[in-house]
Image (cartoon, rainbow over all chains, first blue to last red; front, side, top):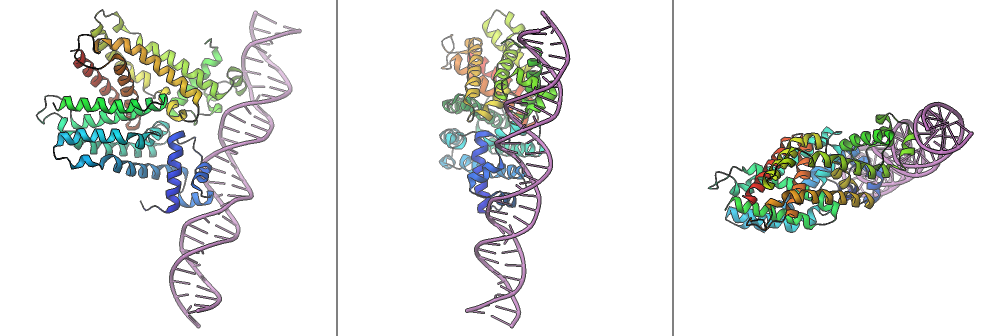
Length: 195
Length: 195
DNA sequence: TTGACTAGACCGACTAGTTGGTCTAGTCTG
DNA sequence: CAGACTAGACCAACTAGTCGGTCTAGTCAA
């Protein structure tokens, strides 16, 4: 993924627009205007709106992943402490990361049935996130001295479910506390499991 | 809400289309064709696409609410048993209810920032659902002989978060087990709280 | 150093088709 | 007959995508 200055401007603009209005409601003209780039340049930078979408997902994921998985919590030695500090860290960064919505969910819901290329790309990105989360939640999983049947994979999926669900409700109610509450409930859940 | 035959055909068609593609990607022409109704009839039945959307949300909610809150679980006397049976009932009906997606989430994410009328209508419908859920989850809330700090309102919100989040992931992965797993985890959670 | 040459980033008017919505000429039904 | 309802041609605005052409920075022989 080598990205030119023009491509980056277009990606930034389309990210903003698609977070707020979704994919089909965001027009190429609008993206160009917001990016300060001509229509010709758009189609020099990307083969189509769909290609922009695919690259955008990758770019969005890459940027988000860093903000999610890089943080002071990584310095903690004790895996359980690290796990709990991770949830706090994501909670604190959540408004910056998803305050405008989540692109994976937006495009996922809008294009799941109509655009298999984009749907499978999103599925892959969710799986990648799930994998990273798994290693973090390991201390709360069964077979680590805990008396429960929950696997780290289950926990990773529950985390993503909680995240995406709370973003939906938070955006509809315009109330970000819903997301924070989600993270804190999840943290309590992890604490109980890893008692 | 007195609904004519033509309106109902249009509502059914637009529901199907908007569940699979969302609001902006669903065109009026398409709705008319699927409903077997002419454009003239559409604009006799509804003032605009937006008005259709608003009525559709109400209609969708009303239909869904019945399937969610009417069931054999209602006959159970013990509130705790009733609560647990409710979750099983919704789990069983979940594919029929949300297998194609959830209209509240679809329109919510797509129109939250651009159409305040629709956004606030969706918020109200979510609040209504939350209210109904609250009374059901009361047996697991604090102050009912349980030693926890969770209110019935918290539980109702957690339920909706889990539901909407798992629908997002299930549609992206084309794997409905994600939703079922969500319900069963939630049931375990309720059991633990009301233990 | 100069001036011919080139690659490719960039431009914006243009096209063919689609959009939500309107309008008129009808057809049923009470 | 009257008023509710239907049909589908029609409209202006907008859609994704195209196309001929410009501009800039670099290369290279003389």
